[in-house]
Length: 202
Image 1 (tube, rainbow, N blue to C red):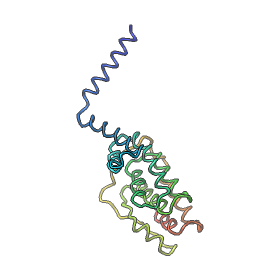
Image 2 (image 1 turned 135 degrees about the vertical axis):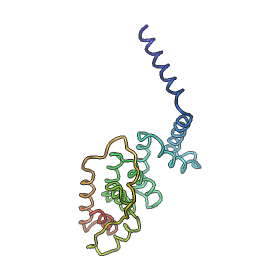
Image 3 (image 1 turned 180 degrees about the vertical axis):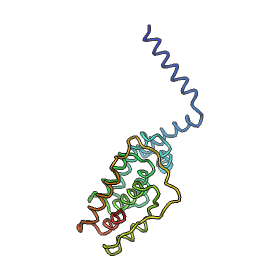
Image 4 (image 1 turned 180 degrees about the horizontal axis):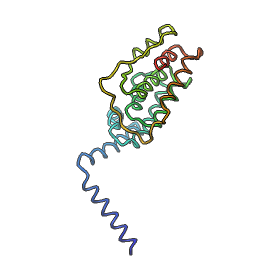
C-alpha cells in the first residue's frame, strides 16, 4: 500500500511540474526533440540548417553527442563553412569532451589541413575569451617566414559569452593547448599551413 501511495505521489508531482512549465519551456523542449531527430536522421533535409542552429539552445547533454558527430564530419572536410559551424561550438559551450575533440583534431595528421587550422583557431578562443581569432590572420601566418611570431586575433571589448558544458575543462587546458602548438610548430614534417596556425598560439 505504501508503495502504491509513493508511486501516485511521484506521478502527481511530475504532473504538477509539467503543468507549471512555461509555454516557452514546453515549446523549447518540443523543438529540441525535433531538432535532435532531424540532426540524427538528416530528414527532412529542408529542416537541417534550422536544426543545427536550434540545437544550440538545447541542454548541453543533448547538444554534445550531436556536436561530436558533426566534428567527425568536419575532421575529414575541406568545407570551411561546415568546419567553422562544427568546431566553433567548443568555444561557446565550454565542455571538456568537446575541448578534447578539438585538441585531437588540431594534432591529427589524418584530418584535413583546414580542419586542423580551424581547430587551432578555436583553441585560441578557448584559451582566452578576450581574444577574437581571425581566420585570415591564421591563413596569413602560414604564408610568412617560419620565424614570424604574433597573435592572430584582435581584442574583444568584453569576454566572449559561453555556456558551461556537461563536463568541465581540464584544469591544465591552457598547458595542453600550448604544448600541442609547440610540438606542431616545431615539427618540419607538418604542413606549412598547420605549422603557421600553431605559431599563432606560441
